[in-house]
Image 1 (spheres, helix red, strand yellow):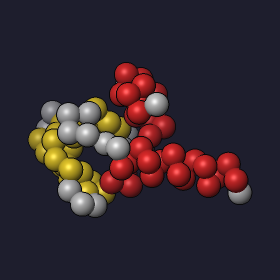
Image 2 (cartoon, helix red, strand yellow):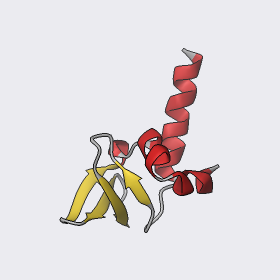
Image 3 (cartoon, rainbow, N blue to C red):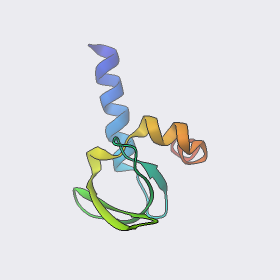
Image 4 (cartoon, one colour):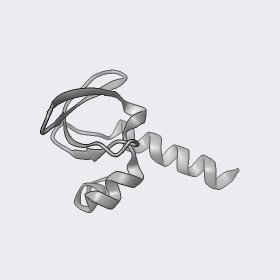
Length: 75
């Protein structure tokens, strides 16, 4: 139970520390750059246009694997 709680806390901290211009990957695998941050949602700009996602859809794990320079800023 303890490792699971730690992982949830890390994920929440990551989602709260997102910044405009940061490159991210969603849990479904969509890659893009944050163009707007709203209270509970994020607008991601992709090559196809802008899409709105819930903050919970941004994956810390996938983002760190694909864009390690973004993950280093958060440590």
